[in-house]
Length: 317
Image: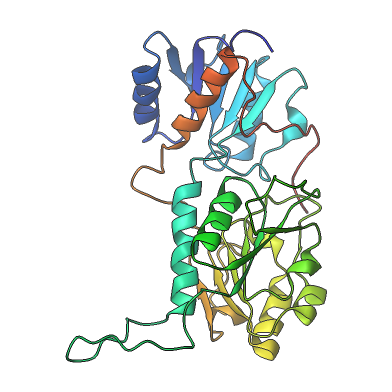
């Protein structure tokens, strides 16, 4: 890897964020040259928000010149055409900055499902516990072991849950926290009480949860999806909700947003938010932290985080 990606950065984000992003970069790197999308010529780094610009605009930026490094402000890259990026260009994504608010959303979803309503305080201030509430001792499935999945695994173990995690490859002893079971098939998560999806959307993960999975899953399963809507076959989920008492907390759906008349909009035990779980006080520009951290790693010849190694389109039909 070269010593560094250069010091001229083209920032292609929505107009109201551009000054904030520029100031955040210059605060950390006073000598950098930060330009807007209309003055990218000669820049070596492209910091681009592919979900905020049109696909045509992103395509023009990627093709306009040889970039040494392209960093995506998003955690996902399923809506970005990686096939347009030449192999010699380093491509990274914002892999860690959204994990804290997403983990917080998952925690709220799990606790709301396990302890619905306010705590059962009596009029005299006494607390009356119920044996039928709580997460302690329940089985938690986590699909994905990136920044979000890793946080959720830690959350589950902290709360005393029995945690099982789905990864693409088998994990060696010591790669997972003590007491956490690793599996490589979605079917191995069918008997958990709560299942959190924290996987990227690829051709392999499209409709990972389908009719076959929901026929095998534990009745009353609570599904939490903070990743991508198409990981779940929503028609199959609607049937599972109606026939097997499956519950769901969905921040992402297919399509997005769900139509007002979709069966899941009025299904009992289903809670839907419109792709807001990533949001926090500073989340609109928190990707700058991932970008700057990778810049330092590049100069230190350390492994980059969020490296996208594929050179074929990741879009799923």
